[in-house]
Length: 164
Image 1: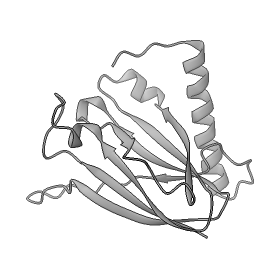
Image 2: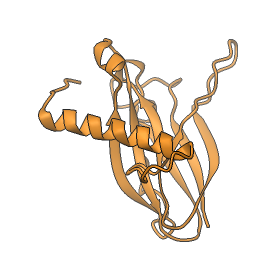
Image 3: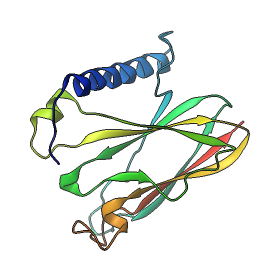
């Protein structure tokens, strides 16, 4: 993937970086304004254990949120490790959770390193009480017609979400 640096992309990177810092400060009781990302839930892939295959599908959660609350799921994405995450299918039940967009952030060190990845944020807003799932699919792990496909790659991560 070719990256083109423009004033807009740099401004967006600064905004997302600031949003992450504000979100972290808010989570630590810093009294900061609410971040456009809301509460960030960092995906935590299972630790590699020699002799045990990594799961290709996993279920996480439940994430418990309040009606009207904004939240994001942060996924590590990296072309060199063949991980490219997107919301699968029609997405979550919109009466419970509404998609608000995606954004990404790459640290200064990641921008300098060849083959480094970045964090992709999937942002949602809790619309009404209930439960739903958000399924994130790895394009390279789920589409055999692509040149990046391999059976052992992660396929999906399903987040169970409960809105109260």
